[in-house]
Image (cartoon, rainbow, N blue to C red; front, side, top):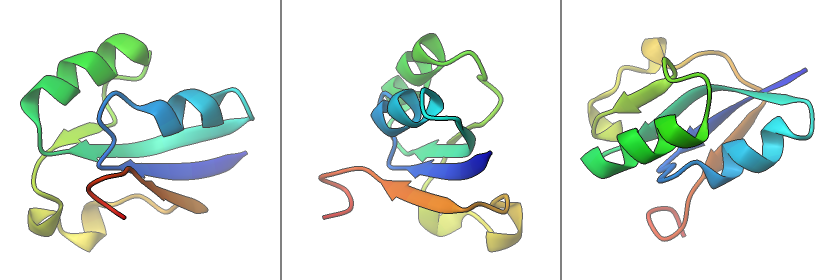
Length: 76
């Protein structure tokens, strides 16, 4: 199984697609409060969402992963 991060995740479109391809999201992040509730409605694992400014997250707190996804427009 491939573990991935979903940064600037919004509603979790990367997680939605990759979960169907035998991948597992191990960490999702967004700074917008509304994204948290929508993300958790769309995904069964609501313990992986981190509502925080990515700049304030310690690298040690980000799980090991094989693939990093970062949503547009926050990450061009």
